[in-house]
Amino acid sequence: MSRRLECGSYVAVPTVLAIRRGVQRTPLPAGDHTNTFRGEYHCPPGLPGSRGMESGSYAATLAVLTIKLWHFACHGDFDTQVPNNSPLILQDRYFLRPDDLVGRAQTRLRTDRPLVFLNACRVGQGGLALTGLGGWAATLVGHCRVGALIAPLWSVHDGAARHFAEAFYTACRQAGMTLGEAVWQARVATRNAFPDDTTWLAYSLYAHPNARLVIGGE
Image 1 (cartoon, rainbow, N blue to C red):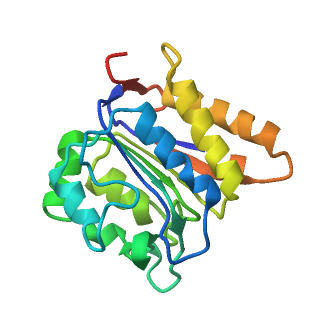
Image 2 (image 1 turned 90 degrees about the vertical axis):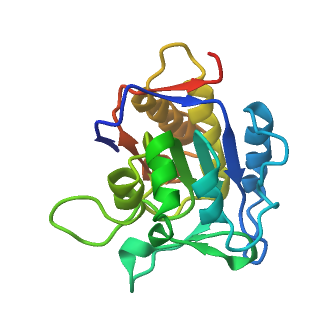
């Protein structure tokens, strides 16, 4: 599903920060694809990455670094008690919640307008409402005004989730590729590779569907 939002015509990506799963929870072997992203795209020397951050530093990093693509490959959970504040579960069981993105972090995201890919179970969900967005989508798209957000609505299989992400970024490298078309190509590739898995249907794109991801000087 793509939710059309007026988020601009393109998202330029000179830098990327990929964050891997927490070490205190069920391992995600396919989550190691974040290292591939960090190698393929430009990641400045010394930038905190998949294992380099200490607990509590994620929101602070969001506030000070100019990052144009945030890719999270980790556990997620839907908190039924506070459904619009459900966490990403990161290293050392640090929970990053939508409500953490305030102040300087929100200002930085509104300025940089990155693409944010939350490759974690159920983080595209929000609380029940008659109108508007909820959860991470409400915070990142509505309050922080990021350029684009991709997140799954339900639990996704680790291997299929990795396949979807790799297919999406591969498609984005094609000349003139839009985000909407890249997500569609990733869906088709994932469905063909994992025909008995519903992961290919899980992802929602919150962006202008004709926006483009411009990587480096491409």
